Image (tube, rainbow, N blue to C red):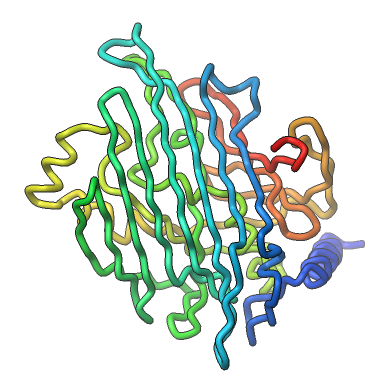
Length: 342
């Protein structure tokens, strides 16, 4: 069998599996969702963790969850799915000098309303960052108005509004709407603790909420990946931001109170949107390790900072491999937990 025929056979087999699971391509009429949405059952929760354990520093951890809270249907309107997201992370950071190490923590909860094409109609998040310098509460709210997003970013009760334009993309259809997805490509620099000459740092995400590095969100992109029948594509993704850095300090709050320039800076389209490309690397599934077990999955090549994405026959992401950390070459991944590990 020629390589082209092998690729076509792979896509056909996987697309058939997706259809049997309630998934459908993003073109044409939206699929008829009832008690499921893009393969998620109402009330079902998926949980992912940062690993492997042997690569993590003492006290370092990160957990993501995604659950379908419900499916909303109105007469004459396509169904929308309501997803609840949560994120928890702990990492060591240096205090005063590199000999003193303390822990920083990130906690957040989000809700996203996604239409039948995978387009985020509404995203709302509340987050708390605790560090040796104190605590800051962040919030962000993005609502699609038919052309762009009305965004509100909050720091400790102080908020600022902004209209966020969506950059053009060949898949983007503002009327449907379609062609934009909620997902932050995860990176080891953002999610892993780093050791530098100055000591420990908790990771740098450029103001982006790591909540949306949830692998479950990429599963919503999978039907569109098969739309062209090639098993590869470039996707425009929305990455909601918070104002200021993870380190809680008065300087961030003072700047916000005086000019609110932090909000303006982080709501620029260049920081909120990214083009992310993936393509199938294998013609058949291979066994990969997921903690104490192995599963059969297909490997997708992906743009930096992701090294590979592994999906099962239902289009569910089971593991994302990150590029090595620049400072210490740690090879981190995010993997799906089995229910016996909860």
